[in-house]
Amino acid sequence: MNEIIRCTRCLLPNTLKQMTFDEKGVCNHCLKYEKDFSNWDEIKDRKRREFEQILEKAKKLNRPYDCLVPLSGGKDSTYALYLATRVYNLRTLSVTLDNGYLSNVAKDNIRNALAHCDTDHMYYHINKKNNEILFKKFVERTGDFCNACMREINYAIEFSSKGFHIPLIIKGSGRRVQYVSQIQELSSLNTPSYFHIVIKGSKVYHRFRHIARNRYKLEIQKVVGGVLDVAGIPRTFMMRFFPQHIGLYDYIYKPFNEITEILKLEMGWKDGGGEVEHLDCQLHDIPFYRHTLKIPNIGKNTFRSSGLIRQGIISREDGLVQEKYDLENNEIPPELKSFLSKIGLTYEEYVHAVVSSDKSAHISKIQKIAREFYHKFRKY
Ligand SMILES: [Zn+2]
Image (cartoon, rainbow, N blue to C red; front, side, top):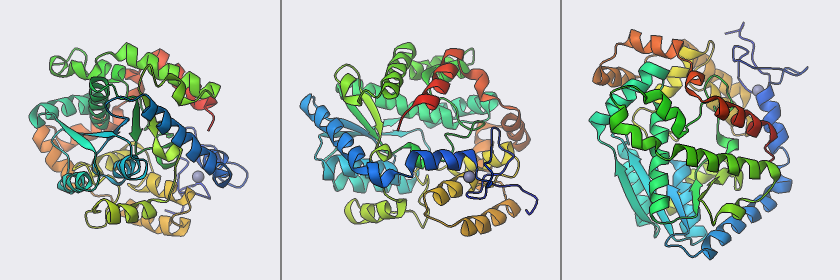
């Protein structure tokens, strides 16, 4: 434990790629966070106004629904639904993807949320057996099935927003609360092209190719959105022509414990026995365990704890205690064992797939360039 060199502010170890430290030993991820969010108190009123302007514009378009909220039953999506319906009175459609791994806690939370607001709601249920074959293919080729699930969620968003002509998608996400999206060896594009390239030439292609439908059109829209962001042109500008996706925490931010209190009171939300992160997915421990296999000196909570330290929610000392415990007790999650036996892979095959995987091999060159450009120049 002592010999691990870590950022002096968060917990990230120097075994991550592209880590740099300043003269005080503070890592580039902490410095970026500080640069983007240290003046939050000064800009938060402006960000809230921007958010409200986007909602106003969506209302003015007078479509069947003002907005769509992807609802997983977790805290972030339920908070997005709460804001859309209870705070801003938007005509809201919410959509849930269930590929067989939506937890019972999440289903209860969804039922309760629907009873506490006036949204309409749709379930898109993908057959679990078929989905297992898809996940297996993703594990074999990329070491990770989460991208397949993320794409399915996005597909559900795409067809429902298209079907109802919905101008705005409000997601329970945001750069400030994304703990791994900036980590090079973990982040990947959840684009239709990535999905398409991974399953191409396999038996699941025929069954799932529609999930990557319209990929060129969708990716052009994404690039246009990115260019507008970089140029400082507001999201409202293109809303009339194609749906705009926003992450609510890019505009409105509260520490997660304040949010869960609101949700318990107002939306009948429950945390499933103290767990607040990713309680919506039955396989939720697997990606965190996967990180520990992929990168030396990473525990299952390293990224989340580091994010919470940056947000000032926990102290570095408390994070370190957890970290020490995690590194000494990194057991195989029970759900990984049962998942592997279901899809017919051994643990050794799984570890091999994770360790040898290179996701970037499945990303098209143009997308790599576009992503680097966007991350570099995006203003906050
Ligand atoms: Zn750091």
